[in-house]
Image (cartoon, rainbow, N blue to C red; front, side):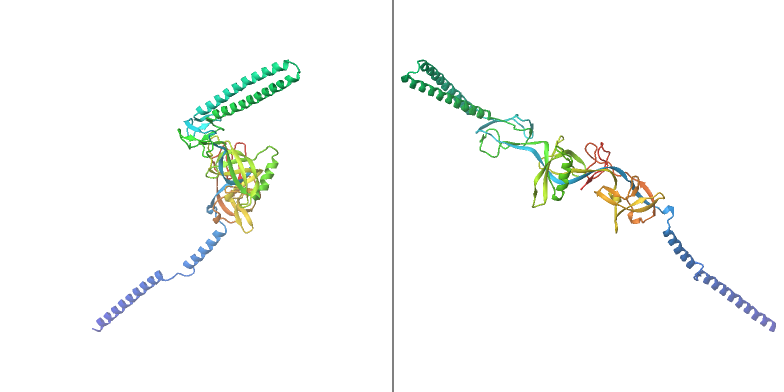
Length: 433
């Protein structure tokens, strides 16, 4: 009995030992899964990650090169322009008015018609003026007959000789001849006046031009004293454009005129609504002789052939005049020029593919083209994009683009705002100021 009791106690002890061992094993396993790792695990990995990140920032791998757009600096002639806003005006404008009174019997033009000088526009009833001319001609014939009789009388009394009693008759006959000669001359003037008035019943165009909207209809009585007239004729081929420039530019304009010599004229371009495309080419005709003190501007007048009727009287027009031409200038896109604390600079792509900061001195520029006086050489690739990601010596991946895109123009020459186009032997670039 004692032996059985001792065996049962030993069995219980073994079971408890085995249970405790299993609990300890389970606890150790759970702790190993949830407990934080030491310095050699996550913390070490985070520290290594930080170090790797700093190392990457200090020197980019080639795969991290910044993609940029760039253009190649070119050498070309760059015209220098002055821009102004003006309005087109007919070169000549005539308000066609009747020269005599009368009833209008016909209108011989269409509104908006192009007419030549001498073309018939309208007719006034001619009957009264034809009758006045006939009266003047008849009066002259009467006076000529009396003149002829007076000359015969003078010839008769002159043959008698120098008898005192007859000398008075000779003098009287001579005076009568002179009187009728004067009357005949007066008749000639009256005939000329009557003929002129009769001619004025035919109203003709005084200049070449285009007619406007007529102000009177057939059947109305028109008068020479009226101010409204019959129609207005405007000469639009060629056409003039009046525009203003600041008085500060007057010295440059006069210098450009004098540099070209006597008889030479500055080139002028009329620009389209976009301010770039050239719609007409002409010349500067007049620089006004007085500065407007109220606005501080000088008035100028340019003349354009207007063969395609691109300009119209009263139309607002942007005009530019060429005052200079920079020979063999280095040009870059204006977008490539950045401003820094020490002045303008550009990013130039070096031979190793990195972007280098290059300080520059700009001679002239507009919204498209900048003329570089110092800092850039012909053939340099200048960056035009992604500036926020660039620093000195940053690796870049370059995509080249043309210095300027094609533009609408006249004759293939450069457009108003400094574009570089195909060119027709003239400058490829242009700068407006």
